[in-house]
Length: 262
Image (tube, rainbow, N blue to C red; front, top):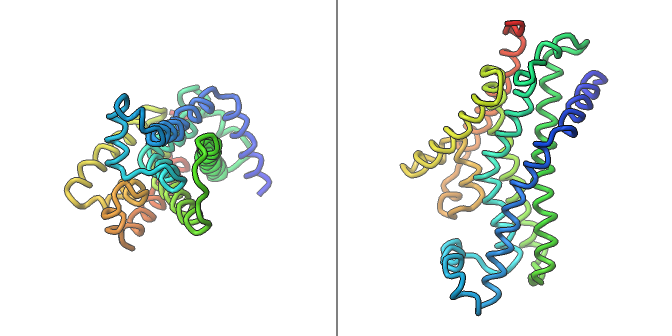
């Protein structure tokens, strides 16, 4: 346990010094900003003519000027954009040593290889969790400024559960990306894999089988379209969980058995 804590502290120091940390918060923060813009336009009918495109988009999404719709926007951003950004975060954490030519230095540490990877996975989890929490904080600030009507406790609890479950699914399905970062020895392979999964998510979802494609599940669960969320079943979640576990095991095995000196 002591070695794991030390490894986590070392990873946190690396992340704290990286400029990419704040870039991810800025990129992810676009969602609450855009959500606030949508709601502001809807609240001000006299702006409808000037922002007709936004009104049409908001109506297509069945948005209303309330907390339920606002947090729903954030949830959909996590289900779709989170898969991309979380994948980027994991790709960076697991691939940066290769890009910086310091991967061999990790092997010289008096810490097991598995412990090092577990520390990286845990830092990834906390980083992604902080991203979604920061969006909630921004949404709260914007919501107060927009004077959104108070939501009932039951409604608020339900939308927050939906938000955090979507987050958990998006983080889980990102686990295999760590393997591609190690296998590709850098950022390019994991980033390419993430983009490929997003493309296939759209294609497979269009064919009606998105419920069984793990990278499409977070987006479907987020409530992009209620009929798609209702189509998810136990097999959908089982496939996603199996994909996550397989990615984790593959990462550990590859890291422990591959000659990192080459």
